[in-house]
Length: 326
Image (cartoon, rainbow, N blue to C red; front, top):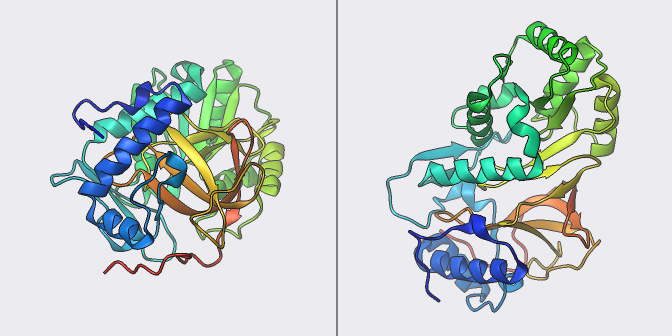
């Protein structure tokens, strides 16, 4: 299969057949150029897939212990995860323009009106660390905003409350992007009745609060912000693309990203619709590291290709393959 990395454009994909063709070409490119991924694939005996369902997915844990790259140095930036275990993932990004293109196109597909929204961010744990991919994304969106109120609100809760009230009085469409524990902290200090603001949570408690199930979290946030739905972003350091939910935790991927569900006892078995299992992600924007990642999340996929995240593995081990990459 021919693959010209210089002309490769995952953002033009429009059909399932095209996705399959591009995924197979990118697989062979990464198999040939990513030593860690090649060793994993060879150990699992999956180096001859005939469609994307047969492509092996690299366990996400390898980003914590190895340099998962499909290109030579130099790299534009290395993003680091916000893990609470003390061992964080690192994603070496050769071309940050690809990341910028991916998140800009992705959020405009999910929210065509985003260009007319004020962007507020409540991401304290991400701002406290270095090289957060989420902060990079949100900072770029804020910089493009035409509203002076757009910005990060780290410790200025009173300022954030005042800005939200001011924007509401102006009937200004607004997006408040926040990590779950910080959003809960906010509504404990101030209750709202928001009619023009989207509340978008980006993940769990990050060790700051006790984890609770999504439905309970969203109910608390809906009551605290006075909104009918809580939106969500699904992304991670190891990927360059994001999926978005407009409510009830049901996510949609952009055309160059796809979620599959694997059997928790046999990671090489892809499950059918509505069956819970481990979440595998194909991110065709992830050209220079690995586009095929087996996450630690549990979920299920629906017939319209939307998906839900229903939990995480308690023990993140690699099942079904005895390969140990040294």
